[in-house]
Image 1: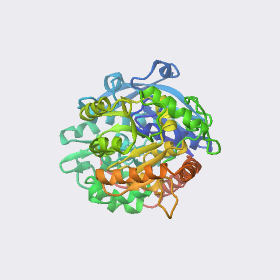
Image 2: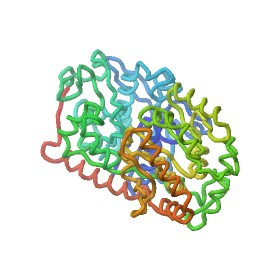
Image 3: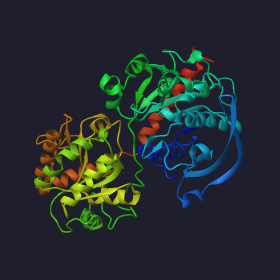
Image 4: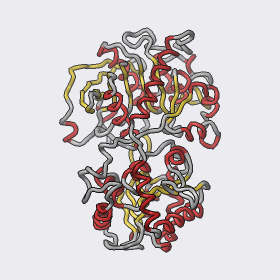
Length: 493
């Protein structure tokens, strides 16, 4: 199968969140399973050592935006396992400090930036000249691609007849822009209707992708159910309900070769489920890095990821002093709103040796935290899938999570009469979170039971093989739908 996989962030070229890892791991797994996989992403600012691995292709694309055409250069890299990656360079739009925005918010020209990216991806396919069976678009930044495949590029070789899968990693991000931007899309005003791209008077990229794609997927079964409800559906629940027969869920995975405590080069010591001795060494190393009490016997709780409301930071901030009083030490790494940065820094200063904060993200330190912590706290308001809890379990760090989305699907609650792999709570409240932490603390004090809990976590297989096989089935189904009766779908010009 010839696959075109589109994503604005792909590790190691760019990373904002888990999408970058998915966009690295899944294409590699699919390529290793015998498919021809071409990943297309943006060429923005990146570390010099990463940029040095890229080669110019000599391809210059002419990308239409409104009545203009702008040039884009194409570079090529290698993801390994046979997966190729192409990077679109247009410095006016992409040579910036962030992919989607900066500390002041989203970029004001994001409509143009991601119309350009979507059309550049399809112009690249045409320039390469290889038949494309399947286009896999991810989130709002590529959501116009399924629209274009059935409109402007419906008869462009080698894309004619190509099927599309639209994967939603976060329904809350939709690409919503004022209607005066419609000419940038190159589509007629007949595409600006409630049946196509219009939502409450605005252009909605993601809505277009959901309507025009041959299949829609999301990244966990629980999230697939939740996104049909008004509280999670973010005003698109009606669209999803109407296309429910095309909506499927595939749980994300992780790369077991990268996330392996027995071989991880970032760790102070290696360990496994059969020999956990090295985990204590990793915790001493982590405590030293963050300036925490080095030989403390208190459980060490980690928080890692985006410091924002949807990740439950309001619960964490409200419960910080209670957590310290319970006898827990805390290490936090992430970035987000300045309010949370300031509050967390103040809490760390008020609790020297007990709490520490690192603003930003460092992948090597990410591995050290997963190996050295006892507990990982993820009290998300909603969580489409989440990867951190899978990384943590692989390293014997027990997750404490709110039972939502992928957190609910990947963590089985540990109860007195039902051994699990973590601790869950339902209500989005600080008392509910603290009650789950208290259960974890109680189990931590029961040595043999805690050791069994750690080993069960480490034995769970979250590798990509099962997910890749499921995607293969979806690709085949999408191709059959595209090429079957009525497969041309809804057209507008």
